[in-house]
Image (cartoon, rainbow, N blue to C red; front, side, top):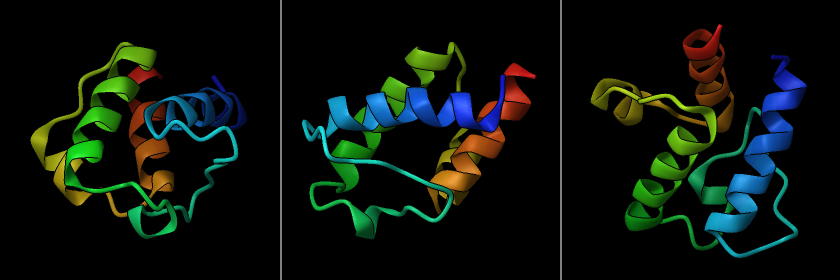
Length: 80
């Protein structure tokens, strides 16, 4: 799966979790860029991404992800 294909699926997940069709994420996107992205929504987002891609993040991965680009890197390694 290409990075671009992952972003297409991630955009849909983000739009669904945050109920905002205008959201488009990229490598540099962080919680500060999305108004409703708080700690509770982060848990919902992680669960939704895991379900979408059929993967499980480790607690260490969840805690250390600094932006969406790092999330995509982990997804690529997990499904690769």
